[in-house]
Image (cartoon, rainbow, N blue to C red; front, top):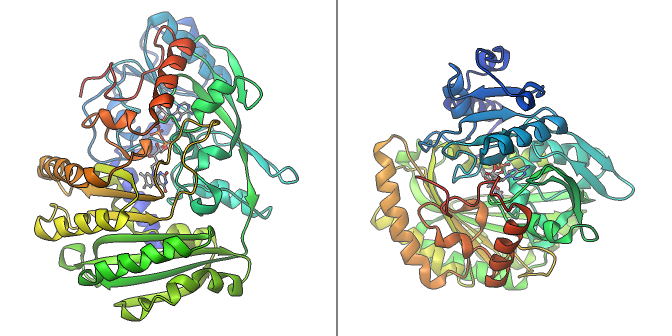
Length: 497
Ligand SMILES: Cc1cc2nc3c(=O)[nH]c(=O)nc-3n(C[C@H](O)[C@H](O)[C@H](O)COP(=O)(O)OP(=O)(O)OC[C@H]3O[C@@H](n4cnc5c(N)ncnc54)[C@H](O)[C@@H]3O)c2cc1C
């Protein structure tokens, strides 16, 4: 089941092609200056792509990671190279009364970076990292990919809870919360933001931290794709790297799912924080067949973050003694891995550009939720055999705190991903998603802002926060962006579909 280096390279190449970015041509094409640019735009050293430019369609399609794009078209795209570019772009937007959205990597499944009209300010080329190993902190620019950040940190014996997919950049991931590696111990990643450099709607550069502009700091720690400013750099708390990270993986026939869930309930209740427990239902077996010919199974992956094999196996004890490993169709246990191997083992990444409908819940009853989704997948299979549901057991230990707007109202996380092989699947996925959202409502305690569909379920945006935090975010938005320079969350006010 492991994705090898070359498979991963093929996947990335395909994804780039899919994104429509005929990269070489795009990167080398001269700026289209056959039109009037204002003084502010003329100062920009990065790329400016206007709607009228012949290469706009390629640029537009490369702004989002996904294959199926919404019909929303920014008036212009500015790819910033520097702080000065950001300031000039915002000055131009204010002068022309253009609304702005900010992009770090375009992975947000709601394609929040694509709005109708206005300016898309692309920070994806800002990728510097400065590590202070003694202080265990790092200043990072938003475009840095998670895998590059952890590789740089690992060289100094340090670690950060980046997204489970290496190519997801830090910028939007952490602003929306960040469910990273070893989350039960490290907490949701945005709570590791010690400070941020922010450019506000009126063009001021501020530092936001516990001591300065602490309301902005609170908002950056989890508000997701509705932030009312540009984050240029984050100062992150980083952590000692574990020397014996292990992965154990098991595939179970789907009729074993009730027993697997029972065992995982016990493991989640007994486990130590350094254990990350995921169970994914999808068509994964046998792995050497194409997805359409595989059976629906449950894949359990357990990661132990330890400093020795002995410590890792002690962490695994509640699962090892459950009797379940012996009942698996396939297993590979206790393999020590570095991050490169962990990232390349994420086989569900393979079809991520095909995602067309994504939802998630925080829940107290993940067994019930996962089994309901598995039953629906069997009784009413979604169109693509690559659809899957992922559950994370005992993923969150902290609920709400006064220093971040993010909310993790229940211990378990459940998300599900519907892929399309062609356009005809889009409407079928929509119907399937609507039904599954209803099905899971009784066990839903809240949502995670980075993996919702705010246009189809606008009410889910508020349900990502406590009612108090939701009100406070609205107040801060008015205070820091009174003229509405920045787009709000999709589905909230200013969008066509
Ligand atoms: C394959 C894949 C795997 C994933 N795995 C995980 C995972 O393990 N854990 C997890 O938590 N999430 C995961 N995600 C979801 C991910 O967190 C979101 O997609 C996130 O929004 C991606 O960040 P981005 O920088 O690409 O965001 P973008 O799509 O670039 O931006 C989304 C929005 O964030 C805001 N924003 C972004 N950057 C800035 C900035 N610098 N300043 C101000 N506002 C900004 C803007 O409002 C923007 O519209 C995954 C997504 C994919 C596609």
